[in-house]
Length: 422
Image (spheres, one colour):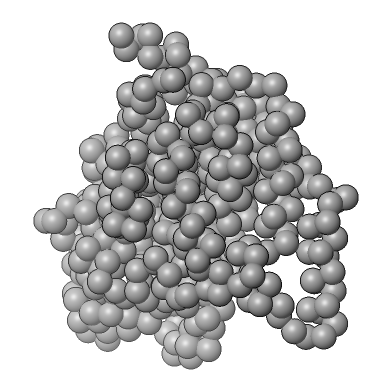
């Protein structure tokens, strides 16, 4: 029976926003999933809306073209011109009436048109998106003959007012967006989530997700590093703690920095060894970060993007990788970098709520976890990690075979093969 399932599940059509791994962590996660589906033995065709030609190794890709002759295209450009020249943001007013932007409608029409023309005959249709767009999902929702084959991958809560605090806010178009996701939850044969907590969270708003939901965690893709040389700001012989990723408004690193600084004050000899590196966009925190940077020489900050290759190489060579989440009661997200941190096999310093997917996976007895603003505990944990490093850097290996299996190709193959075929 299992062999029959493998044969039936051979072809997967993937509809995705972007496959440019440099544009966001969401795109990195999507490409890792796509590559692992191929490695698992499935034949995949990727229809992507990156708006540029991008090739993936040994995978057929189709770049969806933007429709530039439609009313929605014209209105989207007109809106941009008016907003730029009159310095007026028309989006909240227009979206209150229409639910989505004119650009969104034109993009989803472009995707839908490409899907209608495509001759690939899939057994499954997997929609992947990034950020808050869910454009592939909207396009497939408007393509009913795909519904019985549809896996709607929900990477984050949607709409915004269903985010947990402190992220949640109400959009002017919240009613239409909520109706969109209600229809999606009812029409998709399968829904998929990167985390158990996110499935539970979204099922509380859309109960059908509880029936259709499966867990497909972010994948550990065996990425080959092209450039293994280290940047000038990194000394591999030091006790390096790395946070790589976007520091959004709600994701403040101040508790981490204060904890690191307290560790240095209590262990002044560590100043010759220790370094905290923060890499990623941090525009909401620039003023605060600049103040700390002036007074803590052991702190390196780069507010902006670094090439994926560079960051991936550092994750494998630092002493400790840090996963930093927002202060709140719950964090149902599985960070896209979690599989990279597992593969790097370095101890993870997890800073986030008690109820978080990262903490759930690391386990209730995992030692190196703290609330994001518990400065005293963060300093204590860094001191423990430093003492281990001083004794033997190899003792800071994560060594979690269970997590390596959880984000592996083999586990992904088992998940997909268990899905019934219509």
